Structure formats: structure tokens, C-alpha cells
Amino acid sequence: GDWSFPTIDSIITGNSFTVVGFMSGMTLDWRVRAICSGNQSVHAYSTLSTPCPDPSGLTASSITGNSAVLTWSSGGANSPFGYDVDYKLSTSGTWIHSAYVGTVTHTLNGLVQGKIYDARVRQECYSFDSYYIQTQFTTPCSIVPNPSATELKTTSAKITWASTGAANYTLQYKTAASSTWITISGITANFRVLTGLSASTTYNFRVSATCTAGGTTAYSSSASFATYCNSYGNNSQEW
Image (cartoon, rainbow, N blue to C red):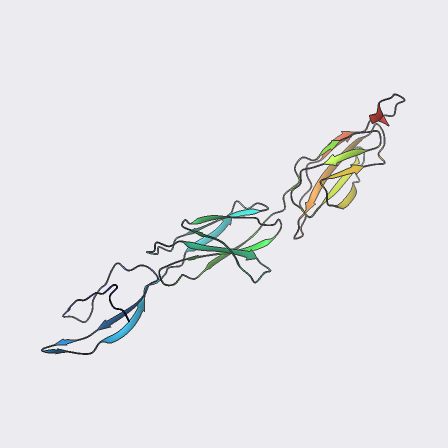
């Protein structure tokens, strides 16, 4: 092979020699021969590899329904290269390459609520890479924020809420005087029109979300509305 880069050509009188300045993860060939009076031996050959240290302490934090922040510590590699970051669903055998980064943090985006994810990181070095380190985390379902009642009439009302990207929603309502909730489940839109209500009555309502992967959030804080009273006027909202 080519011994021109880099070549350390030194004559030593002992049986050891220290070489410095190599990068992590380098595979090196080396050879040595004896210099005798008037002649020299053939070379003896061998190969060595400088280690590519594993990173450590991989954790996931700031986890939301669709993102998570990964952080880890450097293994101290003497390398100008960065890190490979992969992730996958815990039920999948296929890793998704998220990024090649030069820092010890990375944000995963585009995740799905209520899923268990695996994440892994490795250090890239000169000739070969470190082993992967791995962690696991679960994305939460997002609680439905502040549902509201609109289009109030004597016997109906429209309940709306902000979409959280859930698979479906469950709406519960009852009269303020009752302790029994009426449940409507499997709602795929972010609203529901309640009909068959009683006039001049105060109702409480609340909404929960069911994630795509299963699992249901707690209910939102209970809110209330009051239906209009019966009248004989000409206000169309009263009929």
C-alpha cells in the first residue's frame, strides 16, 4: 500500500515509540524493521485503531404531542465530525435518520401523540463510528384547551374547541343541577351541536381527546352555558 501519508520515519534505539496527534476512529497500519550494521531486516507489519468514544447520557425532555428535545454528552472524541441522530416508533424495526448534527442536542419534530418512541445517537469518527446509545420516551396526548359554547338557542347550542390533532374527541354535558354526565364519543370534528336541550337551563360541558395511538386525555375544565328562554317574540335565535 501507500506509506506516504502520513509516514513516521524514525530510527529508535529502544523497543517502543509513542505517536500522538491521530484523530479518533482511525485505522492505521504500522511497520517496523531492525537496522543492523551494514544491512536491515524485512518489515514486520501490524494494524491498530484509535478508539471512537461513545457519547453518553442520552435523554429526552420538553416532550410534547409532536416533538421532543434530545440531549447527550460527548464521549471526548478527537474528531472534527458530528453525531448521527435516529428515531423510530418502539413497535417498528426501521430507524428513521433525523439529522447529522455538530452539537450535543437535537429536536425531533413531526411526532405523533400518545406514541412510544426510541431514539439513538452515535459519534462519527475518522474511519469508523462509535456504538449507538439509546433512550425511549412517550409523547403525551394534549388536553383540549378551553372549549366554548356558541350559537345558543332555546333547545340547542354548538360546542367548539381547538383541534389538538387527536384521532377523535369525547364530549360530556349535563344540566348544572344534575350529577350525571351525558357522553358523546367518537367525534372526529372539533365541534358538536347539542340538540334537545331544555329552555332557560344552565348546562355544564367538557371535552377529552383520544390519541391516534390510543390513550385518552383528562377532560378539559368544565365550562357552562345557558339556553334562551321560550318567548313569543320575533327573535329567530329564540326559536
